[in-house]
Image 1 (tube, rainbow, N blue to C red):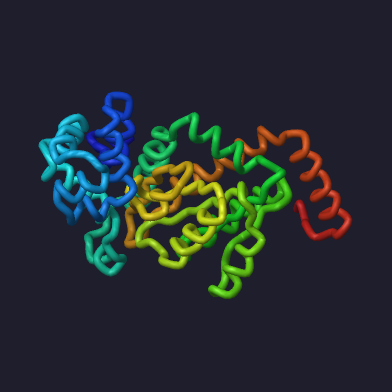
Image 2: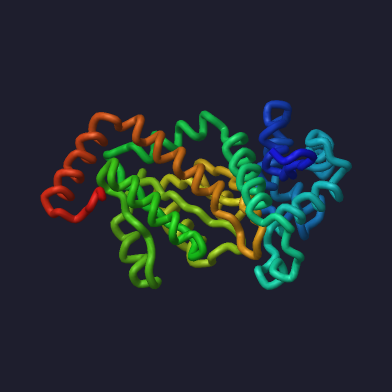
Length: 288
């Protein structure tokens, strides 16, 4: 990590770090914070307490338990999380460029990958790999418009390891025609970084309501797709230029694909052999 760089700790990370210390009522408040961060950002102590069916004093105790200075501090942190990395490219491009762009880009990419993979909960990672490896269920892959390239990459790679991998893309007619084949227990793998795509949130709601198991990669536990996720992973997306970086997201997706390959080693090897044989028979590749 770059010397002197301090990575921000968002509210979801604080809640996860202190989860074992929370009393049941405090846990309900924490769940309400994660489920509806806008309520915290723009609401009152009483409104949050009402949502969690507890008292205002419990709300304040939770903030203190997280190491914050009361509700105002909690509210400020949540607002900061909601606006983190939401600056448009038109604003970022007006900032002076670093003198050594290749070096700064390399450092930023290394920091992002380390921050992302370093804070992955290993039990959650194992559960995600198990969901993506379950050949009895389909895997639907849906990513935001800005992430189309790596969404295609992960769908292709998963599809080479197991059957039943489906990309969700196209206009609304095509998207919901694809989702018509979704069955309870199928996995939905979603990548959505700021600024969030509204159509993707509709896909998530539709799929989860029909029994899909959601694996979400996003920038914060307070992001819209994280609220309904069975398994949520936080991805660092800051870059050196005007656009968000996808390096860390790609690294985490590569780790998930590698996990599936390891878990399905026998049948995955057989499927790869069949694909290689088909390529050879068709003469479609040139190894140089």
